[in-house]
Image (tube, rainbow, N blue to C red):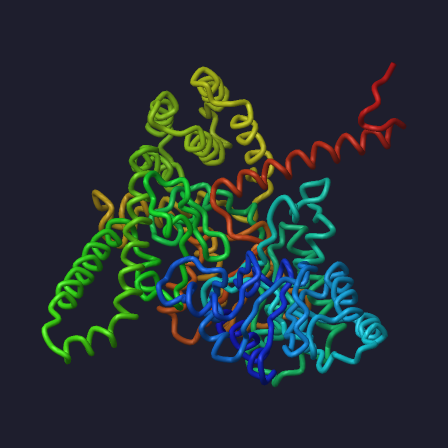
Length: 606
């Protein structure tokens, strides 16, 4: 199971099956699904001459599933957005449309077909299209330009081969409705469509299990099962002896993982800087060179990133040093041009040398900025306390360390808030919990009211009674079984002791020991150990969990896992989503009270 390959195959089919010069027309969502980005109108000579992706820099078209040079090799000379109504009329070009079948996009397509800019149209939709929608398109195709209509199920963002996201985040896709157990209607529908797309692209008809304590996971599981039955003709692949499993989990059962500082490359970049559709914004970095203001991280196009994305900062720094030394040695060899043979060798090697030069600059700048942010926020000391709170039960020491860091001027407000949340979650049932004194200490050290409200939001929405399992009961054993090193170098150290709740869940499932009472099946039961497991996390996943799944895939023979969720969280996005949910809950309670007592939430009793 490889979600990147699945999406690559779809995009390759689109551009391969349509012969001749063509344009690729996307919408606002398929741009992110395919990771193709087109901020302005681009012609083929601009692509070839100015924006060759071989140098590893940001270009108008960047793709994790297909490079612009590959698009050009298939005679795709232009990429544009269907929302752009100022496109030139070029009837000599064929148009490949890859669109989400939303009401808005279908209407844009109707307007396009009424007044076509191109000679022929090949329509590919990222999910299922209703018969009525196809009939409507046929009605408006008065110029008879539509040559083909297909469904290609690439309705999600493939990040790593075993990691995907639906990219459903604020403000467009709030997760919760007006209660802690209800979906936002729009987000729920989009989630169902995304999960079905993953299953169809991987050609899997799974048995579905869900987290029993989560009503949201249950509702999603029921709806996905219903849609599979309704679209039975699409799920007609050869049955396997052991059915694949779709496991639907809830982020609220593990609020700790997205709150922790990260120390492996991919996760650390997302936590401190943010990764948005494979791109990282470095525009705020002091003295950054113009060509590095926005960089691309792609495991398929960047061998160094692929090799180091799961390494911690200590090992990564050593590899960066070796990478720079490799570049320096090649620079010296290219300086010695004494003959025609040397010139020929230089010309042949120049594209690769240019790419290496850009890549070295990119990773040196990125790791340098990560190191600066670690020092600026005193993150080593912060992370050590985070790991202690996540893995051990030592209240007196934790409270003393926490009080010290709250009073430190070198620790950011975000770190202080996260530490108090971790403390409150860890010692929620302890008689000695001193949350009130900590909140008072935060006030006295100028932590904003907004920051303190985040603490209430997370503790209220992810308290022990709302979680599936005892999140902290297992940590002492697992943490103490690891070797603790000083510093950052080494596979396991004092900063990486924590393992996500997902770890235990998947290990039990692979062994066939995951309790059906806690994780029931929607329909039927299988006692066989699963071979293919597709995990979906309601409320978002993290790069730390993705790293664990990748390690499990590499080390466990006979088992293939793919992990995904509504979005990919760092601590900031997780806190923002939790706060948004808590505000919605309050609004829901106010509306319920108003309905009960006969007045709107804004009305006051006289």
